[in-house]
Amino acid sequence: MTLTQAVKAEAHRLGFQLVGITTPDPPPHLSVFEDWLRSNLHGEMGYLEREPACQRRADPRRILPECRSILVLGVRYPPPEAAHPAGGIGPSGKVASYAWGEDYHEVLPERLKSLVSFVEDRVGHPVPNRWYTDTGPILERDLAQRAGLGWIGKNTCLINPKLGSYFLLAEILLGIELEVDAPFIPDHCGTCRRCLEACPTGCILENRTLDARRCISYLTIELKGAIPVELRSKMREWVFGCDICQHVCPWNQRFGMEDGDRAFSPRPGLPHPNLIQEMGLRTQDFNRKFKGSPVKRSKRRGYLRNVAVGLGNCGDREAVPVLVEALFNDRETPVRRHAAWALGEIGGDTAREGLRASLKREEDTEVLDEIRAALSHIDGNPTLGD
Image (cartoon, rainbow, N blue to C red):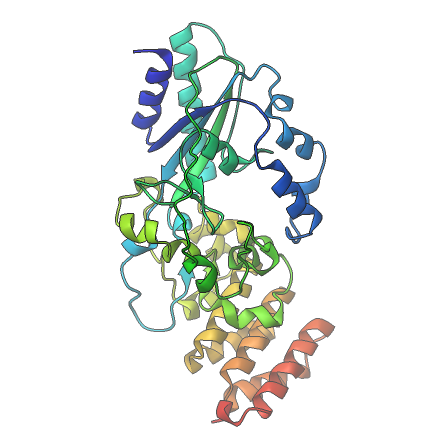
């Protein structure tokens, strides 16, 4: 067994279903990414355009000057098709399937370190290396395509022709030379446009990029302030991430029931959290429930902001008491703002009374604007009255 074969076999043993090797040459679609940044389609993700990250992204050797090979890896997480239907009492939210279990930022590094140790044991000496899993200044889908793992689909995800796209990617830059794989050249999206047509916010662009400012994943995770009013109803019940553009992809429907890595199997209360119960989470409760989970990345204020939007979109009047409670007593401005909006969407006398009472005690001008807009929405729409 050659060194390359041994490294690939060990990667598979560690749980990586996709394994490919490419060179440290500049990524082939760098100009597309640079145009995307210049168009300000990255929203508030300013870290993407900071130096020296941009220089490193353009040339992996700026990250590791000794780099001679890049090992690109993919681990599968459970597809949404594997989830049990939402059950229980009350409105249910949706969480992107990669976030059902443990945080890949905590799971995958140990595997990457083990793989580096394996390489060093095989060659008999330390090997210069850097490893990343969605954490470094590299265009990982570009490298994955060049390493033969699949093609970048119209939904911007890397799609493998045998396993679909429900993968988390990781990379190891190595200061030794391994046998490189041939790039994946075919484009199997063809004339299909299901992902573009299914996206409720229209964030998927024709050139296989996203307007992140409209993407539900961005809105629920990366955006820290208020969600634009015109996009809230389009978010439906998604409270962390979104799977729509992958779910409708024929390649995922074909391979949708393939098992995912057990580390990412659903925790209790996921993938369909009870939104009324979630709205009552205190800081301690949130930290305890989502310890070691990707959901913690949104922080409590972002998560409850998203939950409030989900409740507004569900329209269930059983949610009015917890929304009024949040509007009156939550210390976080984003939570109060979106709770007011949700009450306006649900409507009814109880919601109206809660909104009117909050006008007398709220001091934040942004929240006050949301309250007035919600009252106007109820009063101007007879179907929302009791």
